Amino acid sequence: MRHSLFFKLSLAATSLAFVVIVLGAYVRLSDAGLGCPDWPGCYGHMSVPQSSDELTHAQSNFPHQPVEAHKAWKEMVHRYFAGTLGLLILVLAILAVRHRRDRGQQRVLPLALVGVVIFQGLLGMWTVTIKLNPTIVMLHLLGGLTTLSLLWWMTLRQGQLFSRQIHDERLKRLRVAAVLGLLLVVLQIFLGGWTSANYAALHCPDFPTCQQQWWPTMNFSEAFTLWRGTELNFEGGVLDNDARVTIHVMHRLMALLVLVGIGTLALWLILKPASRSLRALGMVMLSLLFLQVSLGISNVLFSLPLPVAVAHNGGAALLLLSLVTLNHLLHVRAQARPSAKGAVG
Image 1: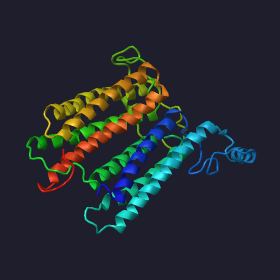
Image 2: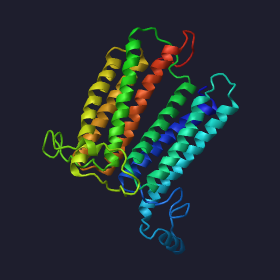
Image 3: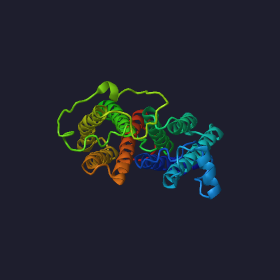
Image 4: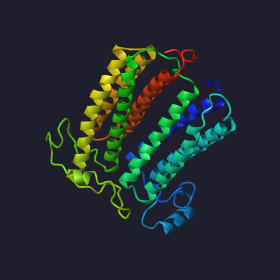
């Protein structure tokens, strides 16, 4: 199955989804999320207005938002890549239907991904039309990572990777730990997305303290009010200092929990391996974990430099994929028959 067209396209779609997520982070962090005030076009065009006539038409339709070409191009490039990904997922769904009777061909995930991508498109539209509402922005981020994770799971299954069973009682407890680890990383990604969507990343400019305090004044009710209507322009954030500090501090505390939890899980895989695959995966997880911590601290100490902030988003996606891989590996090992043939762990 690793040589099938479906597997190759799945792998290509997974890679493209990662690129789309990184581009989305770059657009958001460079304040280009409203570079095009409409959707799916840009000032009424399918490209950024360039000629004098196009610029005149754009300004007449959007008099309160001058054309900033450098921001508009960032947004449109992201949309082009996202649109290509959507078409690729549609092709995968068509192939899945056409070959539905083939042994080993997946059907549910490719079709489910079409629905996920359609909803992602709606979230992308609402991100622009509701002017960067934090809840919509955060859901758009989570939707992108969900798409990436499902594509990677589908690729692993279609390629029949890690399919040989291991008879080891330790794996029962490890499966539970892997699921909990995945949930922990997802929660931290939610807090990271909420921090970014509310422009709270720079409200604790020092480390390990926040505004020179170990426990600064915070406002939890304001910080985690998920919906504030559709009338405000949320670019730059609307929360006061205490609410943004609350979000930032909670993201830090959850990072500490992730460091301990995922670090323990990774060391378990390294020091008590049930297979070479698990040991290698533990080393990858531990490396990504320390990379993420280093990038997060660097974001604070160096005032959110764009390359570091974008890398922090990409690192979160890779750490998530490592947990998805672990859960897939353990699930397949649990379900595989002793005679199954596949990659040797």
